[in-house]
Length: 69
Image (tube, rainbow, N blue to C red; front, side, top):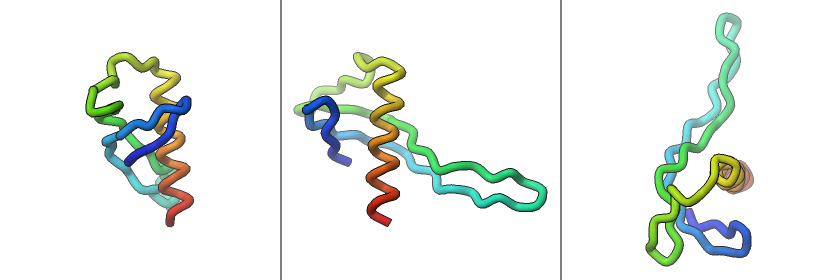
């Protein structure tokens, strides 16, 4: 997915887990995105990002997925 973060266009590869509904004996779980790769101009920058930045990027990915469904 291509996103814009801090006015920088990034290509992000991720794994998406859909929401698991609540059952009487299972509390369920929210959807999630696990980032595998972040590239800017084909240069891998994942290791340069802080945990907080990665969480923000995950949030952008999840918002994009939720708004496109």
